Length: 591
Image (cartoon, one colour):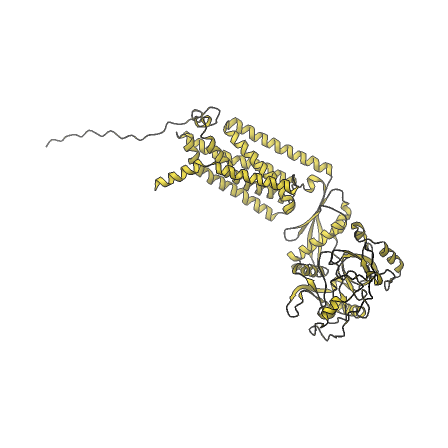
């Protein structure tokens, strides 16, 4: 049994080049991916690049603690992203941290006060009647007169719902609305459905004929002002979209923008809010198998909302398109504009169209969010100027360079020739860390902040500690009188076990710290965990194979005084050899 074991060991010793080639290929591939992605530097956090970081904490009303859940938090993130983007901010990020925290990072050059007002307020959702609409920035072509898509079916209760038999005709009927299906989140509304709540999937060419601003908003005293705003509004302009309807009250007519199913921006004149978002009791995305309608969005209204919705749909059903549509408006942006063919008095409604699961769920979440007993309070706000961020980055790099220099000096003085292996391993680890951090920026949004730089500096000591453990094991073997090559192989199993246990403890601490903390401390934990994993990779695939190769060189194998492995300096003892004890003389006994 001993012979095969020696054979395997000899084979492992004779092929350390395979491990070196493997890590070289990995480094080349990662570096190539970094240059191909165009992100050749790590993405910097707010504290290094400058900007504003806002930490918001979700708060529920008494008795409504269940409102703070993953779905609602993700919906809040989507809404805040829309608000921040509406400010014309580029490279802003909004993400959840923990169960009830949302982090908003806004880069330099942004009005921090305005940003705080935007992300900190509760979402405002309204149902407003559509007065006029057309594709923004497109000259309206001539079109045939529109045909109405109505229905004479009545509803007698919540469950007494019939599918319109003329669904395809209603879907394909000419509508003066150039955008029956705007959605700021790429949701696609269309096709007729039960409860007579419809959404036209295709914009009509007749937008200009009935979407003209000449249609005065009902109940608005300043209709001339609204029409003037409508005529000037260009929804293809991001800044104009952000200011559309700014300062309008729920009881006022207003203008708004939305995106239709074809990706075109649409502008609207909207009447006063008829139903508030808080009047929606619940909204769900449902796959309708009975009517083959596919994914639909169902709404259930409160007692007060039931009456409001019944009244407004009764009025809209008697009008021609687009004035038989109502717009679902979230933060002054139209996310959907279904049309009505009859009064919906049952307290429930269903919107169907060419939804997929994601778009249906997105619209349902927005409808639900308008009724959530959920608000956010500022936990912390940090504003860093670009100059201060640059100074902090420079200080972090200087600290890292000093730490690395001290480690290298110690290794050179104490380990001499072995320090070349340690320094080479540190350089490989640093290169891998840099490349991976550069790739993680665009991949998962990782940003290098000041605590993350601290984690990288701490990792220098952790990585150097692994080399020291291995080198000392090799030296112990030489002190026992063995030559270098056997010492390298005999020391590895014990050193490997120690290195793995040590790195496991470090990684476990980093993982726990990442899970239980929020904010910038997570950057420290993430970097510490990443560099700990890379330490294992470098020691196994680079340090040990390289030492195995160098142990065959005369400089190291002969124990040169500058190799760091001189047996005399290490106090090596001559190998102990077993000798037979001399046999005691046999005394003859006389009888």
